[in-house]
Length: 216
Ligand SMILES: Nc1nc2c(c(=O)[nH]1)N[C@H]1C(S)=C(S)[C@@H](COP(=O)(O)O)O[C@H]1N2
Ligand SMILES: [Mo]
Image (cartoon, rainbow, N blue to C red; front, side, top):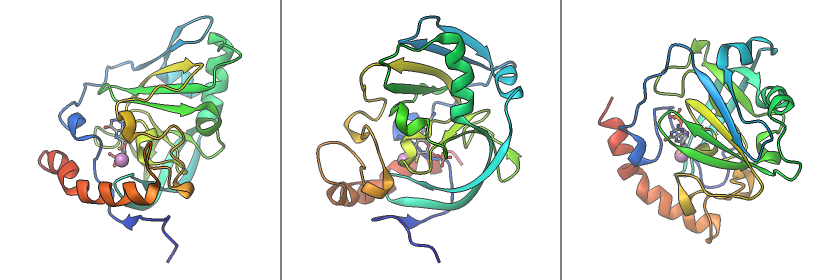
């Protein structure tokens, strides 16, 4: 049995997120697009199928660690490396040379901001399939971020937009989101140490799960 990161317990994967997003399930358009804006010279919209079409596909097993202390192990994601996708995008939009952060937005309006260093790490995928099956409405179809070394809130589902930024801006989770969110350092949330947040989030978990489980 592998070691779980500090403060995590094993769980089965189920649809989850901020409680206020449980009821916001958008309709995926027939031809999904990815909008790229912010600190870029040429804001642009990309046809998702075209964007993904030219890139090498890969499969990667990883664990998903939610800040509320559950971890789903051994998920088999397929897709493309996010850094490959971002390289193609950057060639067209020309990000500002001092851009250091990237806000990802989902179809449900959920936003999360990562440092470019973290989101362009080798392990980060733009995933289209989970365990061989195309991603559906539960787990982030048609395209989601999968950043295994960061808490789950950085792995934005139903990706529809990217915004380059010079500075950090907390996303939908506000102070509950840590700018880096590295699981190994237990960077769960801002202002308090990880082991303190661990207890707070473990206590909040049943309440956070309720609106998601109610919809199953
Ligand atoms: N679009 C979107 N992405 C999101 C969320 C969300 O509410 N909306 N929740 C995040 C959180 S907190 C977690 S733990 C994971 C949960 O992924 P799952 O629903 O596939 O289990 O998605 C993350 N990405
Ligand atoms: Mo989470």
